[in-house]
Image (cartoon, rainbow, N blue to C red):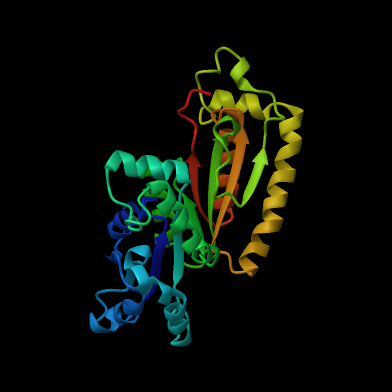
Amino acid sequence: MELVIITGMSGAGKSQAVDALEDIGYYCVDNVPPSLLYKFVELPAQSGGKISQIALVVDVRSKDMFADYFICLEGLKTAGYRFQILFLDCSDEVLTRRFKETRRRHPLLNDDNAQVGNAIREERGLLQRTRDSADMIIDTSLLSAGQLKSRVQDLFATGVAGQPHMTVNCMSFGFKYGLPADSDLVFDVRCLPNPFYVEELRPQTGLQEAVREYVLSFPQAQGLVPHLLGFIDYLIPLYIQEGKSQLVVSVGCTGGRHRSVVFCQLLADHLAGKGFRVSTNHRDIGRGG
């Protein structure tokens, strides 16, 4: 049985994560009280093998029952069940905007806590330990619904037999739009010559051969490539040894369209060639540089 527990901030995209997992064959149940986790992990045996992948959403909507979250997780571990925890996070500013746009009620709103901002801060405090204990964290502040779906499916789609148990998400971004909050490693390639200042290359992106050739033609880039790949090759086995199953490697340039995209693709191709499950996400490629 493959068991995924989805939790996180209200409004951060748990419903979209469930949709993504259902599309790749998971049996999903939303808003499960922690004390009922035991019931759902028995489903594979009861289904006669028809259900082997389960995703359960557990969050603060269960009110006072959420206090049993860690007790129930320890119970599952003691009983021999293995599971992964996915935490969906998002900035307070974006969450506030989402609740205003959708006009949905935050689950912690009440007569004593009537403002969305206060409810979000209270929830963040309640979930801090939950976030700290998660196996995987996805920050959805700057992700579209489609990007979130791809991230989730890349994490949990069945991999190739014998492939190392590590999913690496290679992300390009623009520093002018902010650092990706869920990055494990961040590399800055703003030190390299910028195609933005070449008129014929400016409207193109790092996915196009002319930009790739330009970026990699300089001695600075040629010297950086072996150092960067060697550094990644050294670190990943250490992360695997520590039990980490997801690694987010972010490469940034000024606008996120040219240099960072080239090096993000370079890293992704290198890691895929070594047998790792790799996804790419060019966060700011469509913003105009």
